[in-house]
Length: 123
Image (cartoon, rainbow, N blue to C red):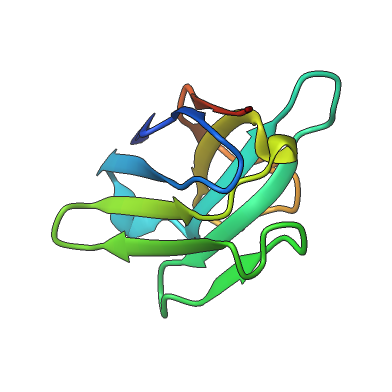
């Protein structure tokens, strides 16, 4: 079992920054990687970024490339999502998720999920 807890959400103005944290615990040695996903009202869930466990490889959605950075602190078992130059369209509930075998594009089928943290970008 893997437990995930997100934190760091909040309200910011356009152009602002936030850093989300995904604290992991349990059998984290057994996961393929950690992914960040978001769900905005009226929209489908979308993948934002991911980091692979074995080599730290990362990936980003086109909509956040150059603005968001994913990283991990193995000593603390935390995965971060640094979000800069936030835009109103980044408003969503952000989730981190993990799975023993894969990180899927929209997170479908992934086994472990946190409860999410709300990010609101508004002037």
